[in-house]
Length: 83
Image 1: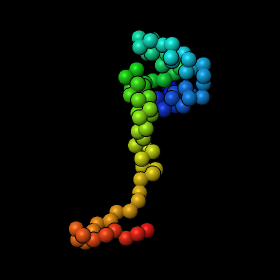
Image 2: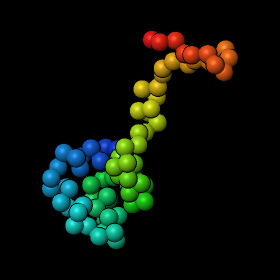
Image 3: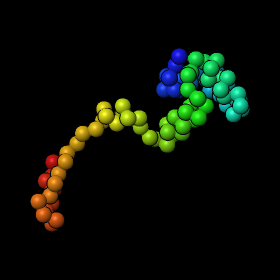
Image 4: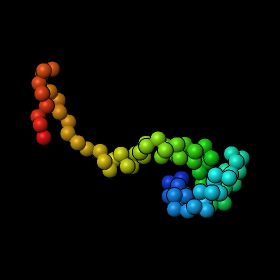
């Protein structure tokens, strides 16, 4: 069974699949997901698609880009170093 992420990538690469999803009513979405081997619920699929449209990132992606510099000022008026 495909995960939501795998199915979403498949959709991005297939114009035919995009058209099939556009034509599917809310009631038909469960059948479409099952037909294409996606084990997600319609609710989970919709939430994932919304997160992609809103520019949110998944936890795994956040972990890959996490990092940076932590600076704790010594006093409220100190200025962080220029890097």
